[in-house]
Length: 367
Image 1 (cartoon, helix red, strand yellow):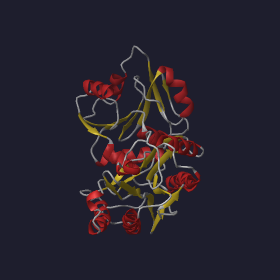
Image 2 (cartoon, helix red, strand yellow):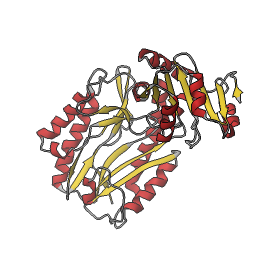
Image 3 (cartoon, helix red, strand yellow):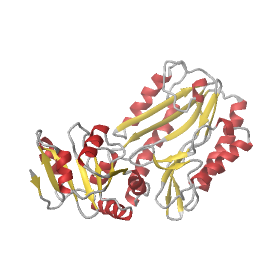
Image 4 (tube, one colour):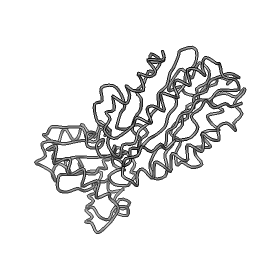
């Protein structure tokens, strides 16, 4: 069954951008299965199944191929694109090959399940590449509308952090506090993506999973939270808290971290390389004897995924560009003692650097 287009919902400009990049890279064909790239290019959050659903893009045309049982839903959502359906007894991989028989270089979605990859490899005699260089290049440069969506979802996560001091921490487990925070995130997000509540010595683990440890007076508590909005854009923000009275030694180190984080935000500009921004912040921590405890990259891009390009770390010589949105999140993690992290999301928009999480960076006291 085939449906021919009238008008509809696919993001035609994004498709055109992808086609231009295929031509620039001499790639004949791209095949995108349900996931973030599929949603980015089609505006549809399709479900990834064992049956093949794919957006097929050549340098000059594009179409969807879907299982017959998904055809009516696809037709209702997409009116501007040709839709081909296949029955249970059909071979959809051969159907794609039959429509693009001269494809010699094919880009597959980087997160395509292997059982799809293997079947495409059997029907095409071609060189296979990852679609990620194209998807990274497109998705890392946000439009004004995308920056607006990221501003909105960031405001929602800011509100959660601003409400956290109202929670009673003493004699509650990390998991109990995390559940309260999760309910707060859900009020203004479609999904809760992660809630890190890392207390006492657990704060020295950057990706600690909340557990049954009881939070006590004097504990440092690192809280890193994020979710996804209905529009598909992600929030991510970290603040460091202390229960009642902080240790003076920790306060001293935290103040050094705060200066380093502010240096990262103020230095984030169009034209600086990703690795040099990481180095500026890292050098400040090294000069103050905290560098050895800063064990991860300075930051990551964010958009329809919490972690996406660009990546701020040593070795990434790519220049930061207009439209890039990324985290600035230095930290220090001293095993057996404590850790701390401050994370803001910033956007390079025109001549300005926008900080989506521009609220109190001081050590936050809870009770």
